[in-house]
Amino acid sequence: MTTPLLLAAKLPQHPSQSSLHSLKFQSLNHHKFKNVSFCLGQKQMVGAYRRSVLSLQSRKRLEPICALESDIPKVEAVELEKNEKFEQWDSWTAKFAGASNLPFLLLQLPQIILNARNLMAGNPSALLAIPWLGMLTGLLGNMSLLSYFVKKRETEVVVVQTLGVVSIYAVITQLAIAEAMPFPYFVVISAVVASCLLVNFMKYFNFLNDGVWRLWEDFITIGGLSALPQVMWSTFIPYVPNTILPGSVAFVLAAVAVVMARLGKLSEKATEFVGSISGWTATLLFMWMPVAQTWTNFLNPENIKGLSAVSMLLAMIGNGLMIPRALFIRDLMWFTGSTWASIFYGWGNLICLYCFNSISREFFLAATLGLFSWIGFALWSDTRVYGYKSPLRSLKELVFGP
Image (cartoon, rainbow, N blue to C red; front, side, top):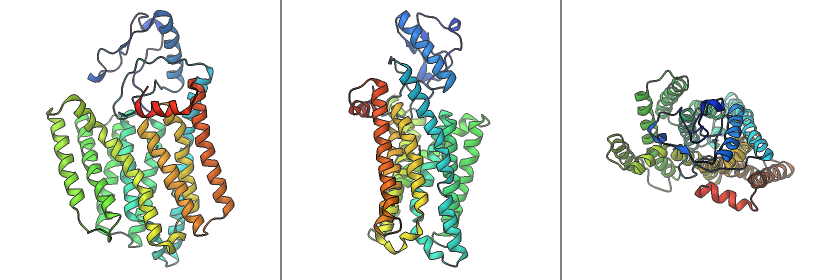
């Protein structure tokens, strides 16, 4: 998480291009950013402006965003003392997020290799340890988050999400070969994945019409909201009736909300809420992936050896590397998804593997110590660079905003 966010505005490259009395964001044409300016004193503004230019030239990042509206860029008139430690941690968190590309690149590779060996050995039943609904949930989450970050033009995370889509689709293809999932579903999934990659590629390189992109956003909003309750319900079949009612109800509600928003029948806040739904739906889909996997482990403990411990470790590391950046820029959605995936998907499945003696005690203890030490380090560093006395204030700002 799935997974640096939101360049809210671009500043001029030289002070001569901006007034020292009212620093306005001139480069944004969107109506949400009209009439926005910083009302800082001259002396304070010069210092903040120079530091902002330095930060933009190096990482192209701005102030933390409003935590509860992660999908809606906001310009906050918040002045922070960007001392040397602050600038260094800003740079390091961006590097950590970029470094997550490596474990995510390798994330599904051990699982893909293990699946291939089982298929070639004539043991397709081993792939039943991997719930196709759980993989589908992760795939839908990755596709929605890919569009989310493409819209924000966050290259590092776009690469991460693209790798996630491709690698999970490879595993789903193996499940289809092993007849571990219905083939008609695989055909539909393949068409959606191809469309997703094509549309997002064209959008990133500015080859896509804005109208087509809005249609795609509406599609992933409706699709995500429809899939989430249906996938959650289907995970517990046969303990619950086999029905498409949850997805159908969610589909109708999502379609009505999107149409009303497009027709201007909703208030501004309601329209903004509908616009932010896709990002949060993607996060919740991604968060459900470990729940589906844990449920499968509980129902079929004999198939636990079909999981790859290396894949679970890489999932824990990749998502963990993004936690400091998500916390630093106060993006609640990103922080929630990354932390959940790191703890409940990566570490949670390592617990299952350890309980069934599939990994050694040393391996499990080392992974546990590393994960929680890293989270503690992220909280401590964030508290230190912001000059707070307790990490609870950082977490409070993450949830409720600055």
